[in-house]
Length: 127
Image (cartoon, rainbow, N blue to C red; front, side):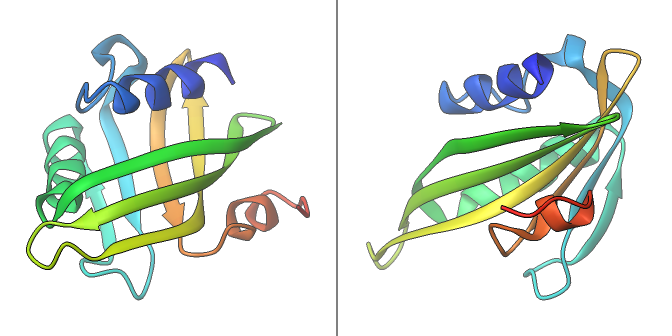
């Protein structure tokens, strides 16, 4: 769980893609169905590009993890976010979740979900 907290702390400080020492070079970034660019990206360069792509349309994007739940090598994270669109200035608030997989002290997979409870359900937990 501490590794995942380090990732979110780095992102809160605008450190992208995050601390390199905790990111596996073959990391997978997974966008859900219904995302602007659904599917899996592999490798640190693709992970970095995916994160930067998300931020391109937003003047600000702030995430605050509300809950971390560990099941084996997975950490389910429930996130509250606030964002302001770059062009229109429209602000949005919401909740989503992510499932982070850790292996040998490194993040090997980051999968986010539209729903706040989806990551918890993916590992057999309920909110």
